Image (cartoon, rainbow, N blue to C red):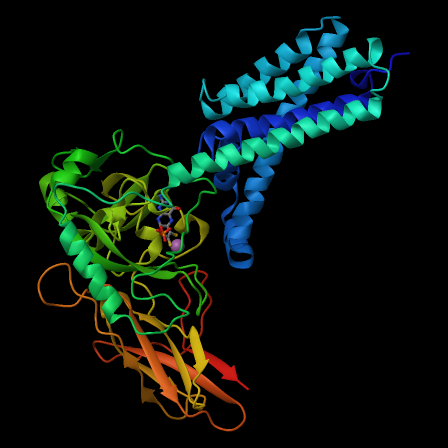
Length: 506
Ligand SMILES: Nc1nc2c(c(=O)[nH]1)N[C@H]1C(S)=C(S)[C@@H](COP(=O)(O)O)O[C@H]1N2
Ligand SMILES: [Mo]
């Protein structure tokens, strides 16, 4: 009767699990939070295969937690594959009485799994080496146990194996995170482009800071942290050098351009606000940035649009696609810069589309193709029941509330109405009986000329003497045509939250 850890089913299970943990860590160490991470393709397949109703429900009930659960499941599955590989290699080695087989077999099969999943021949060595190292360690410890080191009990060897896996996980996590920071551009580098006016960027950002109301706990006119919504737990990691954009489909002539072409063209610096159709009424998925990019119109003209439906499909590197009227795109921008930096990975590096006044979802990130259609089609979210390809619903948010030293109360927030433009924000402090005008921030400037930015939010604030006892504050916005935003409250699903925001204060 042997005392080997690897001779018992429990021991094999433990070593296989430890190999899986180390393998995952080894993969993460060499890839970071990138599509080449071994769990990433599984996550993608799961997310894309999920029925629309599940995705929509997950979004409205779980928010991004749904995506995190999906990622967790993908990591567990990738780990399971590695563990099964290790277990099979150990058992086969024992059957064949071959001491090399468990380690070599784990390495080869794990490497194979990595290659099949990610297509990355070199990076798949990360998980392979780490998983095999754990199996090798367990074998070595067992060897010591039976021959020379009686102090090393089976329990100790088991603990050492687990310890090695935990150590690998820690190291891999740290190394991988380091790569992630480099790759995501959380500190995106400063923008440089021959076609861009960078002095104008600085000027406009200064204007935005200047126009922002002093409401310290909400975003200024240029958001400090811009929300991120997309179908990926792990965003595409594209290289600008390899990027190109094609205008295809119902056109006279296909047009293709690369990153250098785009950067040579005359660029604009535009303030644009995005609002996600999945945002709850008084939510935090509306944000504004100063984007640098090239107007798409001249490119469409160059291609010669021949569309039967006057509609277009934008396609992206994450296999995302959205269809909408081509007229909306004519005023759009192909953006490669954001607030004076290179467009960050999470916002679509190297290039995204900005479609004035329309829901966030048609502002396609990691843009790869503009396909002019002849017939209507459905986009990714529309296939899942959403109706988010049109103009945004107007909204006035109530995010700031404070009491001044003299007892007066101050409320404030942002208001956005897409191309309708925010003309006025009205506040009621008596539950909607009487209304007064809020103070609004000046309109952000247009990309060029003296006019206002046509698709940017404004901030509002209102100070009042609170009545004794409780009261309800209601906020509504009025657009440039004098239309008051609809009062009726609707959920985000399927066509965006709508209604007047109100809050009760005691
Ligand atoms: N390629 C791609 N583009 C995308 C998405 C996506 O999942 N993939 N999500 C869309 C949605 S739903 C929104 S609201 C906006 C959000 O842009 P942001 O992440 O820069 O805020 O991007 C849009 N563009
Ligand atoms: Mo969205």
